Each structure stands twice: as structure tokens, then as C-alpha cells.
Length: 171
Image (cartoon, rainbow, N blue to C red; front, top):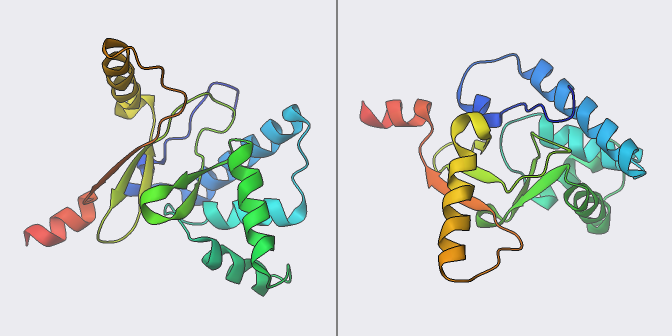
């Protein structure tokens, strides 16, 4: 992937080659970390791989359990430090509604995340420009400007049903 390209995690709601999706995002994250001079240690890389394994947000203790199973230790600071590093360097996001973390599907790109969270299956899609995330951010910025408010950081989290769960619920 090149700088400025995007792997939309809206694919979370559609069939796709997930190993390619995760692999491309991991490769981009590694390049971004290297460009920033940030050290993607084995535990940090493994934490990111765990987040990339599924299109859903994961709690720190779930990540910790997976790290422990891989031999990285069972102390909570192991997971929290790795996750904080990933968030700090734009390689993961904190999904506050779920008190969880999700891999950033656009590492290296300046953006304010727009998350679509399925209340039934827990899948999380980070909407990108092709899904209209830019319009959401522009609308928020416009509202803030009209109130003379300066937005420093914003994350939009929408709760609803993914296409699969909506179809099941409709039956």
C-alpha cells in the first residue's frame, strides 16, 4: 500500500480476502512505524496482528489473553503498553463505546475515525472516504465552526446493525 491509500474496513460487512486485507494493513503499519522512527517490537506487532485478525474491536484483556497464549506474559501492562503505543502512533484506535481497541485500517493517514459498530455481532467497520466518512467529518467541522468551537480530536461511533445481522433480524 502507498501513502494516501486506504484499506476500508467497511469490508468488515462484506465478503473479502481478509488475509490480504490484514496483511496489507500490517505492512503499511510497519512502514508507518519505521517512517516515524517508532519501534514496532514483537509484542506490539503481535498485538496489532491480533487486532487485525477480525474486523471487530477487542478489549485489552482479550488481547492480553492472546498475547499470553503466545508467550508474551500475563501481566495487564503488557497489553496496555502495546495498545497505547499502537494508538499513539495511529496504528490502532480506541473505540470508547466498547472500551476496546480496533486496528486502524488507514495507518499513516490523517483522519478522524468514523466507526460503524454492529450491536449484534460486534463487528466494527472504520468507514473511509469511499463510505462518506469525509462528509461526516466536514459536517462536524462546519457545526463546530458555526459555534466558534475548535475541534482538536473527534471520533464518531455509530451503533446499529451490519447487513448480515439486519437481514437475520428482518426474518
